[in-house]
Amino acid sequence: MVALPSLKGLQAFEAAARTGSFAAAAEELSVSAAAVSQLIRTVEEQIGRKLFHRVNRRVVLTEAGVEMQPRLTMAFQEIGSVSRELGGDAFRPRLVVSVPPSMAMGWLSRRLTGFVAGHGAVDISLRGDDDPVSFDRELIDIRLSYGPHYREHPTEDIVRDAVYPVCAPRLANGIKTDSGPLAGLPLIHTDWGPTGASFPSWRNWFEAAGVQPGRAAQRGLSANSSRAALDLAISGLGVALAQGVYCAEAVEDGRLVRPAAMAIALRQPYCLTIPERSARRDVVAAFREWLINECRRAVGSPALR
Image (cartoon, rainbow, N blue to C red; front, top):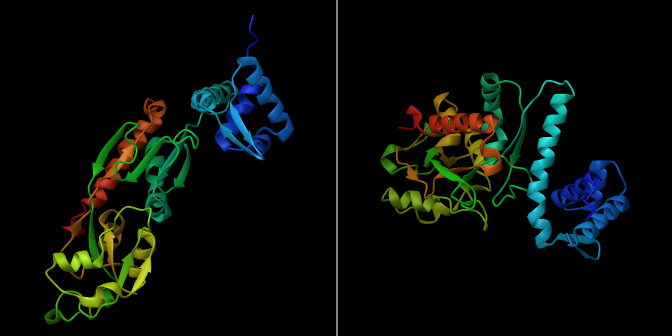
C-alpha cells in the first residue's frame, strides 16, 4: 500500500510554492527552513515525483508542482475557514482584491467603507498591482484591470472610460479664450512606462482638437501614474488628462474644473477577472456587483457630460 503524504508535508509544499521560498514558508509555519525542505523531500519520495528544481539557493516549481499548488491552496483555505467556524469565532469572509496602483491609492480605498457598511464584516486585502498578476500564487479573488489581460480566467468588460482635461479652478481663470484651447497653460503628462498600455498624450488631444501645439505638447510635468498626475492638477501645477473614473469626484466637488470640453475615449475597456475558484463565493459576487456600480457611477457622472 502506497503511503499517503502527511498533512504537514503538503502544508510545507503549499507554503513554499505560494511564497516562492523555503525560508518564507518556514517563517509562516514557525519551523526551520531545513524542516520545510525535509518535509517536501518526504512528500516527493512518497508520490514519486519531483515538485521543485533546486538550483543553487533557489527553488523553482516543476510541472508537477505547478499542477498541485493551486488545488492545495484552495484546500487549505477551506480547511482554515472550517476551523475558524468550529472554533466558535464569528466567521469573517476574506477577500483579496487586486486593482491598478492608481486605483488602490485613494479611489477604491476611500470607497470600501460603503461596501463594508452594506455587506457586513469582511477581511479585505487590497492590492495595488501592475499587470500581469498571479491569481493562484497571490490568492487573488477579483482583479480590475485596464484591458483584457486574463482571458484564461472568466473576464468581463465592465466600462469604457475617457480622458478629460482637468485643472484647478484658479488655473482655468487665466485661460485666454481667443488664443486657442489651453493656450499658455502648463501641461501634466501621464506616462505608464514601457510595459504599460498606451495612454492618450497631449499631442493626441491637440490633434483631435484640430490644433498644432508645436513643442508645447511635450513640455511640462510628467508622472508615471494616473493618481499622481491627478494630484498635481489638483495642486494647481498644470492641466492633466485624467480618466473619468478618477477625476469625476474632484470635478463634482469643485477641486477641479474642465477647461476644455473635448474628451478622448480610451482604447480599451476596464475589465473584471474572477478565477473560477472564487466565482461561487457570496462575498466575491457581492463585491463584483458593488465595484461595477461604483466604476459606472464615476464614469457616468453628470459632471463629465
